[in-house]
Image 1 (cartoon, one colour):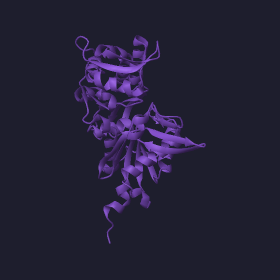
Image 2 (cartoon, one colour):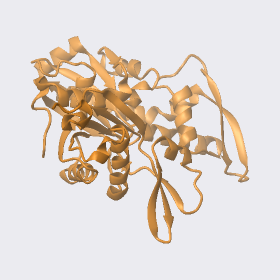
Image 3 (tube, one colour):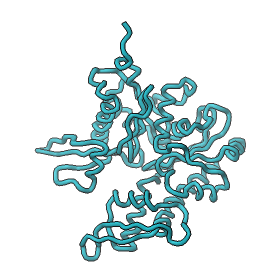
Image 4 (cartoon, one colour):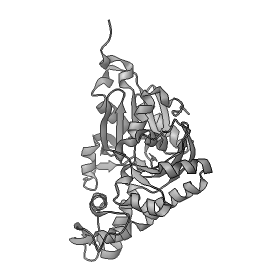
Length: 346
């Protein structure tokens, strides 16, 4: 008797983009099934730590938790900062992605995306966290390769392709050809650094302290990489006045935020320029034709493609669905034999 697809072990195979800001899970033959913030709320009672909520519900608690409850982001700069908490978060996400099928003890293979600049110790921490969460086999794929596959770039052909994956903690720049990475670099600048730059600017220029959620909202609503005509759009932000300690609100302009983001955007430009300088001439010729592809949540920063195009003189495009490109690419590498060789066990 043939077992239903639900009970087959391969139906539980998955690819995980364990990001600093969001975790995205791709399940074989089902596609993207989960996309939630990489946040977990831990409650401590009588010295015992217990998971309260994970993902979307935990993110709502950030900055608002009472004593005894912590809303934690267990990843920083693309790598695990708290392995015990990360294991619990991964296990919760895997169970949720499999809709309870995991309770039947199904054996599943997991592909995890890792930054190119991560050390062997950091990679082992990711592997151990996934293994302890229930995976019987864990393979790794480098984020730029996964991003390029997810964006539909010709990584299996003898043609150079350049991808810039801007995540929450890191920016990965890579030139790829023939299922391999010809050049790669990783800069510790991403969406978190953009949020910090906005919060620091508002604190420094307006004596107003704002939280992480507010600075992220400012980035999404009026953040940009290049200056608008005039002041551009405006929005009201609320926080704590550092002079008198009272709640306060004020209006800020798009031009202000562009100025606040100039340093981290400049670091992204520098990483791209350095990659171009280190690229072999024949691959450079291909990049002139193919251009540069942006992926990751940071690619959604308005006019970033224009800023990079002006800096490099090359065409720059934002991939379709940049937020899930890495998970999509890792999932395709798991399913499609055409990408054999891009996954590693070490």
